Image: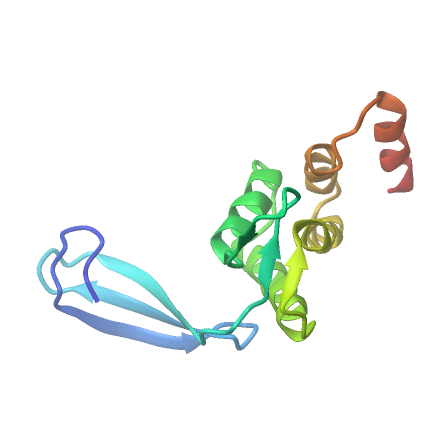
Amino acid sequence: MRCPYCGNVETTVVETRESDEGDAVRRRRRCSACDKRFTTYERAELAMPAVVKKNGDRREFDREKLRASMTLALRKRNVSVDLIDAAIARIEDKVFTSGASEMSTSRIGEMVMRELKRLDKVAYVRFASVYREFEDIDAFSKLIQEI
């Protein structure tokens, strides 16, 4: 594994453990050149359904895009990385076990909204306000009242 700090290819695994969800192996590594430590994750590569965008384009399911969206909604909120990772794992599991060869971004977006609602109501409202593209304040108020 190449060191992200200095680019050296000689690193040592210092600690290995399974993630809380059991879907990944977390490894702490130490670079033999610069002595800095970093974390890597090992996950099984799954054949996820293609994601169908609103305009009909098809893309590969992108876990990091999902993480970026959720992290943006949760910005400056007191939610741990472990809870975010667990939510992402649940979404991935639902997508994978759906058995579908394709899944719309709207369906994935609804899954994200459910997870955010569980994690943090403010993040849920933030995400929903962008995702649902509210036309007026009444629709936005209705969402807030539902919480």
